[in-house]
Image (cartoon, rainbow, N blue to C red; front, side, top):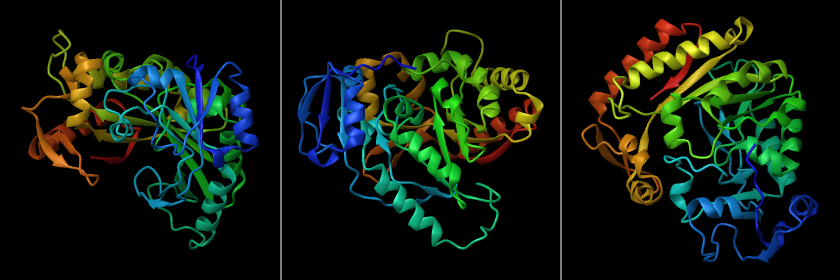
Length: 350
């Protein structure tokens, strides 16, 4: 796991509870500073990566909204945290803040109460669907990486215990980190971990400060043995044509990735695995920021000849692959996957 050692801990007064004190105690040399709002931080004089390394924020989540999903989960649970140690060049969470350090929400009990009330009002037994045949699934890591949060905040283990023991609910989260402490917790297949994968050379450019693809691949069988349901997440799929100074393009590299996955994953793990596939959506403002901090990544992410603009629901200008081209890209991806790992069903692709 990353050597996260913040120099400052920013906190809102309403976040100070026993859980917050436990977090602060892990970093005795950090300077504590009160702030009015966890999502509107004062100017700390820190840039993108430095803020992620040097700051930790403790806040109280006010809104306990639970949103429908229908993709990797039935619902998106209220956020347990926001932000991440990693600095992925395409991260949609980073788009909405000038700096985006890890923010831990310490009112875990209130968040879990909201989930419990929500799921207990739903029809039971659940009608089986593509997210799960038995349980209502809740994504617990949409705005952060739970593997990192687990290393910082004991409340995350409380959350996994809640889903492990709940008669109707199941948790799921995607991650780019391998936190081996999670292997000591046996969720009895009531937690689905989705390891994010892409071609290794591309990951080195765009998955800044995350664990290597090799490390993620090697962890799949271990997490299954520890009691997790293990799926994979091909996201984002970045389309490129020999921009890495080789004769290979994205199709060659995904074929090689699928072959690596096929060689590593044991038969019983393959039998329970599915994947989800999301092609890249990038952002104009993020592109401009990246030109200053990670310009090589933009050779892959910003390719106007392949892309068209789309205004997001939040008003930002995003770019995505042109619709007709993307249809062909999706067909190509499905064909390669079917040839190399036909045992891996696609939950959804877009």
